[in-house]
Image (cartoon, rainbow, N blue to C red; front, side, top):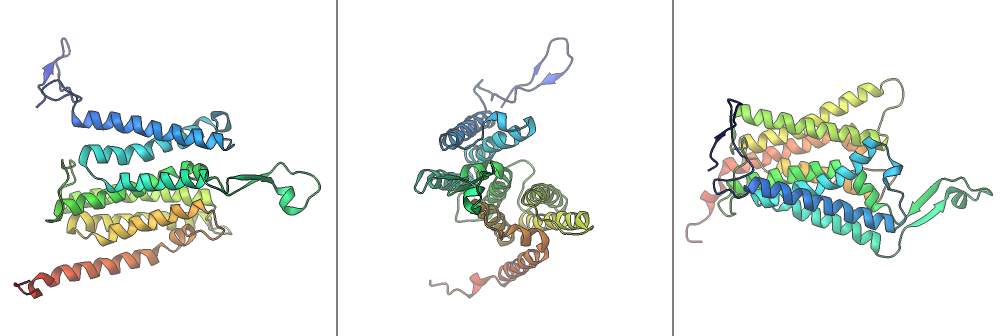
Length: 312
């Protein structure tokens, strides 16, 4: 246990949070440091590969805000899963990170490689337009740009694993309980978790929709954004409340799957991406989540174990 000490002349007592009672770095400090280092390595590695392929992703191509969003996103999207794995032994987010990063790098480095073509070549124009189209590439660029969505997906995946392992009798529990994330949580605590998670999901998904140009023609675009933002909040808040208050796993797991499928589709950059439906018709997804929540709750109430013969 860390020992408080007085700071001369300040009249205050401070606690050296970065060290435990033996003077060694605490687990939180070690996890934070390693996560940031590996997040930086992850970002630098992907940027080197992207630069070698001819992508214009150097600092001079972006504003300060755009640079921080892209480069910082590559750090955070790796640092969060690594921190959860080191600090709490929550492993699914880091497994998802390895799978996603491996896919991105593998697609970039295996044939066919990226091909840069002027629009004039595709349209049969006599003069070059200066507008370049990239075929069979841009995986790292899209991963970098959408890193915030991947981060939310990995976070929600970690929350699902955290609750499952703290409630299951067959799986080892996490090494340390996260402060404020007791399972089952009180109604007030579950509401707070759901509200924060809903705001995070809504903010990222509204940005994602705006980036993809998901909008409504006419003078009601702002109403569509408000409608979608409210839906994005409900779509995350309700499953998270059910997860921490009633330990219903499937709705949050399915929500995480929806998020992953939405952002994964951007690797192919198809004309008909799933996010327009996800953002504009969110009530359909919410209905699915409520249905599976009702089914899971009903199965819990049935207590199927009493129907299993004792001799088995």
